[in-house]
Length: 459
Image (tube, rainbow, N blue to C red):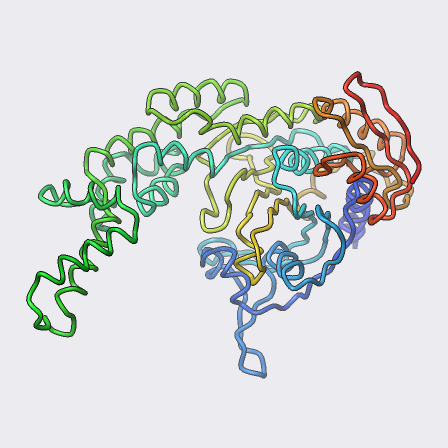
């Protein structure tokens, strides 16, 4: 009974924390079509879900997470309002532990920011995850931050096929822990057919430099010169087309070995944010990555530095590359404790392809996080207490160009005073900010000028 009261209290208090930042409550079904969650995870969650066939014959699952359901509601236009949209959720999720042992029902709370694809949006979500725990009185937690897009850009500089890039990124964590060695990674790649035979290296290199359409046209031309008879069930042209496609998906052993070496360096680059940034910059230079390859990661860290994380340390670790099937940018864990007592109590990331994958007509930026309330409840301080509730957002803080850091500080000061406040991430002009405020029902705009002065305007 005590645990139930504690979880309920934490859920309510974090809910108010998010509400002050303009995250409105949304609820989602406990049971959804299984395919919904598989589209997001690329099958990674399949072994962890509780799935069954309902009376109508549909394959359904108890929800293992919330993001897919929120994204589907948005794609189906069930979430009204202008972009960006901010939503919060809380409730039980159902998931087995990896390997099938343990797990069951967990209480989860999180938030999704839809329609904002900037570094400022990334920073807002990361800050919420860290500050929310601090607001409860929890201490000793930290952010471990990776970036799928930045890591992919470093591999792409080596001209790898997409299959090899995904394969290597998926093994960064195992290289980091020593579960795998460069030799075992290469041996696995050979077994999977990721490396082209020596005799085919030149042709493989040529076809990878061609567009898919040009490579297919080449196969068509070669097929036209071949015998017109069928070889088994396939024509010579079909055989050649499949051969060219296979070549495009393999890599030269030399290039692949260089990519394995890159993987080892990336796995060792983890550390406090500033130190890791310097290491990654040197790695990018050594491997010939284009200027700007690390820009999304660096811009996000710069934006995050504008927030008061209340002592929460942030580490950068590009070996954190889970969820490659759906994450497109920043990915992060919220950790607590150290050594063998280290545990992940939450996390999240950016998955900008999810809305379109679920039937949306266009690509819509989406980033969010979730905390495991059962774990958080066990970290509450002895003097934890409830707080009074307050209302929805009553102020919108917007900034002139170059004044975003001051706008963040202004929003934080207002929230500390108990004034629910939303930070404007997308408006390109004062008129756009006013229009957005009216649509959101916000009556006050706090405009931060380049000189740091704040002008209050009532709508």
